[in-house]
Length: 240
Image (tube, rainbow, N blue to C red):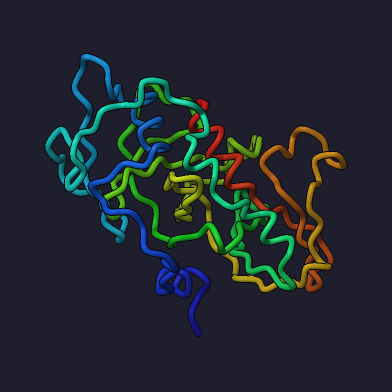
């Protein structure tokens, strides 16, 4: 029987064709301008392509391979206009009879993320650090030809625990930005009936759950498991 890690690493989550590697989305332009100096009078740092095995390649030329330089937008908004017009995924999830979720652990606490956002799961990759980035952004990797910021999920969620290094990355895509959620270990994949999910929990749990979109009621253990709000994390990444 496969372990959760083996199951997720073998599974192909890519459900939709993405834009060509050489084309930046508006969200990527915002990110590059904010953290890598795109549009400023200095050279953009190189980002070596990351291998799914978790081993970083040798340093690459200044520009990420397969990604040509582009001009930054005159005014970079936090939510780029074309990405802002994307369908509200969480509204769609609320209308479904069952919701598929990927379960994982962050410092010993279980969380989930909707499968709708997940592109793949890879072993941890050592990122290229960005001096101008806030502490919750560990750095970036070039994954499948796209600039991918890695987010320290434990910091986003306000965890004070130091439970060891993260072992995996849940690669998500939302509002035109591909990003990786750094996690300790994987749990399982859920298919939960809508009646076992409670959305809009901020009013009940307070501002400390800003990045939790809802709660899944686990019938197996009788506990509540947080559902990560990927779109709010993307907003925080672009806002800095």
